[in-house]
Image (cartoon, rainbow, N blue to C red; front, side, top):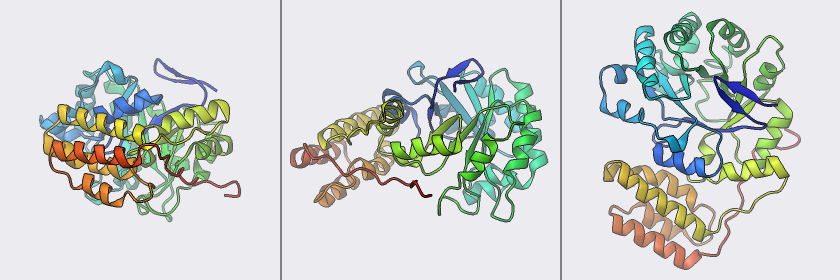
Length: 341
């Protein structure tokens, strides 16, 4: 079933790109857009950083028309800061402003921001309501099940959020305490989607590695949309695979190594154009691991590209990978969800 957030209408089985620090920058978002993603999120942005004119945060607010629709994600713990930051973010004309109540990183959560707000539900609700009232842009929320297994709050919180005016909820099926370990628990997503009181869209997130995983969670837990994060790092084509499978039931093969080299080269060159060279080189290493994963005998060349420090060294390593492995199709990713799960 289709649904809307603000003026954006999504068709059946929408697939979103999750916000990820040092991953979902403009270049990666552009790549994912080319592979069919329906909505993308910026890296998360500190509200305090924006209102104090922090260069890094303000840079993240820059959006291009080629990536729309796009959501700007903000985090913080101070009501006034988040309200002011949302007003500043709105000047970039995002389609959505998303509030991060889910980041589990200690330096964020233990200071009361991100998933730390799951221990102060009244403040979380007040922040959401005040931000909604402060901007005309649709406001959404991304969060987790609760602080830990003893403090699962999501079912009650989802109902409480109804009164804030926010327009969609993304649920990552882990607690703060789990960080990214263990397995995401999608049963709570199913509970939210079957709750007749909840009139806003529910977006499910966590451990979707393959197109088959995506279909399984859509069929089993009935989210209005799904969000893919870590499985897209160095694999922007996952969105093409998922969309194709959902539409046709046909599994697309992994790109050949030659195709992956071309994608990685484009990714690197655009990154160098848009950010300081050293930052681009270091950030790309996280992607290279997955771009060239599962190729028999590639370890020495993968190490070479992961340690390359100059533009010439990067291109040389890519050329060698292409020369030695061009026509190889890497092994498919393993499904995380099983029929008996």
